[in-house]
Length: 228
Image (cartoon, rainbow, N blue to C red):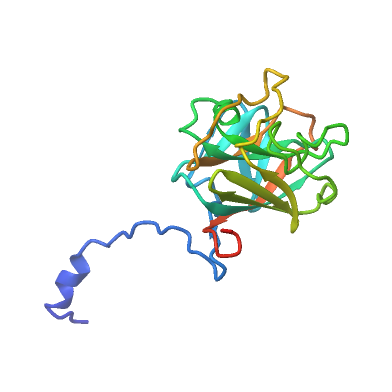
């Protein structure tokens, strides 16, 4: 077969490699930060880890932080779909982390943690949906271990509002005096920026069977109903 003179130079041209595209928004404006395949866009710090198995993020090992390093977020709604393996499973969603964390405790003391833990022995300031040790969460919205829960965290100016499975459970205004800090591991008091990094916590190295799994981490801008 004869090739035309015009076709030969085209065959010799190097292939063009296109840059990876950001995940697109869906019809409702949600933009996924976790792609369900790997940790692209995320970094981990600390002795524990989060791994991707069968499309889910899974906590493992000791204390650690998986944080989204591509951008800081300000006013928005963050949606996190998770399930716990047992009532004592422990994790959290960090928001407003001031700077790139130097260790796993940076987010604790320089951000806010939306707690994930339904141990019946803990109080309202430390249960799922609470702004850990700053603002209480109403009980009763979490589903039993093994079932999926949806956290929606609204960042609106300085305030943080948390809904769990469609039920509003926390309204945190940092202008209000926080409870006294009683433990060394509880967050340092003081202001946080309104624009910061987000992250997911893997907690102490509990016995097997206390993992927390994350199916979705997505973000969308505030709309008219959530901006009020």
